[in-house]
Amino acid sequence: MILAGSIECTEPTTEKGSHTNWEQLQMTVKRYCLSITGSSWDAEDLAQDTWLKARPILQETGHANPEAYLLRIAKNTWIDQLRRSRSLSFILKQEQSMTVMPDHGALEMETAFLALIKHMSALQRTVFLLRDVLGYSIIETAQMLHTTEGAIKAALHRARQSLGAVRSDLEQGVLALPEAESSKALLRMLVAAYQLGDIAVLVELAQRDQLEPAVAIGIARNHLNSKRTSASKRYGKLHTQPAHNIGMAA
Image (spheres, rainbow, N blue to C red):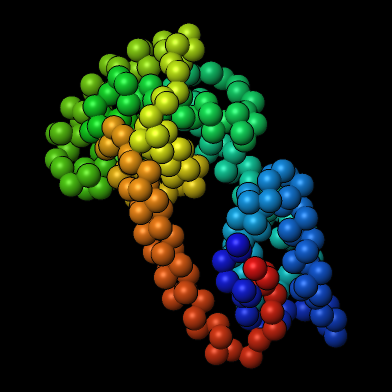
């Protein structure tokens, strides 16, 4: 379900005396998102992200061509998500080119995380993800993990020493995804957190070796509630303005 029934704002115009048909534009964005994602769930999420990113311009100044503006945002957002999905495997395998379809990418990333869990300690893989994959500095990583810079440097050194074994397993295809539900739940949520760029959840999960499904559900629910609360605060002020709907029906 798309977050929020509508985003309300002062209606911008494309030309003097003309008004944008926001309902029609909403359907156009949804159809476009479905065409590039191939998934109704991904399309809904992408459409929501698109409207949220476009809101400042559409609300405050308007745009000469709202449809082109929205579709460009949708395309670029989807490309960013795909790049994020395959960047972990790219770094681990050190390949110069890789074409990954969304479904295959998720499976490949689960295997990559499994290799990290196999060959690195919880601290080592968490530091590796933050420092070498996501690009955080030593100082930032130490602050996020509530430890010293020395501990981060030591863990990173050991993690990098383990990369040879990680790459070897990935290149040879010797890793089989686990049957245990606790391990499956952990890998799936690691992939989801990484693809969404949810660093807080990624850090929490990377320090676990397994995850009971009930705990996974609890983490997901808590995070979803946190996002909803944040979104509610962010858009609460809009309801007091003279407004027209330009948003998304659930």
